[in-house]
Amino acid sequence: MSFFWKIFFSTIIIASATFSIGSYYLIDSQFRSSLNREITAAYEENDILRYSLNHEFNTEYEMPYNAKVSYELVMTRKQIIWKVAQSVTINTSKGNIPFRLDDSSFQTIFSSSNIKLDNHMLKQLASDKKGYEIVKSGSNYYLQTAGPLTFQGEVLYLENFRNITFLFKNRSEQYKSFYYLVFTMIIACGAIVFIVTRWLTKPLKYLSQATKQIANGHFDQRVKIQSSDEVGKLSEDFNKMAVKLEQTVEELKDASRRQEDFIGSFAHELKTPLTSMIGYADMLRSKKMDQEQIIISANYIFEEGKRLESLSMKLMEMIVLRKQDFIMKRVFAKSYFDEVKGIMQPALTEENIELITLAEEAILQIEPDLMKTVCLNLLDNARKSMDHSGKIVFSGRWIEEEYQISVEDTGKGMEESELSKITEAFYMVDKSRARAQGGAGLGLAICADIVKMHHAKMELTSSPGKGTCVVIRIGGAKKV
Image (cartoon, rainbow, N blue to C red; front, side):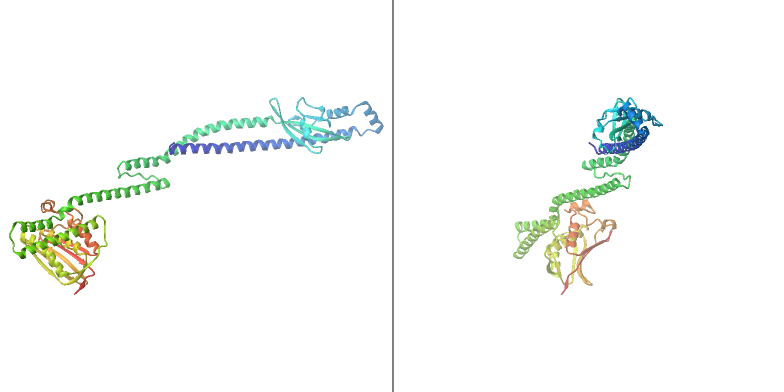
């Protein structure tokens, strides 16, 4: 059963039950109140009859003793009681009060009406107590009231009858009206509850539809907030959840795409040093060289091979595993700059690019392989920005308490709008040129992560046609 019908039927049942119980209690209370009034009136009538009968009995026996004896000889006691009872008539607004006299053996002596009712109640009545009973005769209801009456030492029972059929008829009519009213109320209430329930559950229907759309992959679904109550608050929270979910899904998609692109492009980032290593190896294999050149070439291949082996693992740990706690080592700046220059010099010389290295001595606290990757990427980007000629200044100097590594070129430069995007993974200012030169766009993105890992800062400035300058500010360095 849907939530709509649960609310509908629950409301109808509760409203009907509440109305029925309240109406029944009201009708029953009114009936009992009227019945209590009738019982009080019946007791009062019984008292009036008892008083009248006692008065008539006393009057009947006020004659002289001799006359009384002769009177009793002529009439029996029952005849006297019958005669006295016959003379008593009590008139009310409803007519004469019907009554009956019974002796101590519960035999009827006198009855002023033709109402035939059982007197078994008298057997349960104490000799000094009054009582009543509601009895039905045919289609009529009577309130039968009884009380003891003493005559010449004998206990008599006086019963009077009060017709209370109208009470039961009124109650029956009220119940009949109540049934019609309940039926009408259920129909009217059902229509109102249907409209109200539909209005209340309409936002939930929209929420359900939006949830299904999100489950089918449409994460841009939102629901319209139509109120400020709990349902409105739920709609608001749903929209917040949908926004967060959409953002999370986009982030996951982006991360997945980046990982896929990284796997496909990582080899391209290592193409330049690997090409150089293959070139040196080919020289050793195919050309005759003196002993010193052989040693230099073999050493370069060996050192770069070891460095690339170590670097590939470190880059993988940093990018894929998000490792940040690499061990920092103490490195002398001048010798470090010479190593970077030695790696880049052959490629720059081949393209007629002048590399100027200026380094003030300092002890740097860095991860050598990763920071060397940053320097090589910056120098390689500077090389790619030139057309086989130009100048690159690779410098390191103290500025106040920071050691600054800068790479400044005389290449094409870039627009200011490109600077905010240049450190994004796979972003390339000139895609066709970068691809032709073996780039994949990972360089500056990896550099930015490595610089951040060193708690350093990287700043870029550039002007179209004038070149680009990249500055890395390293803290924690020591002067020598």
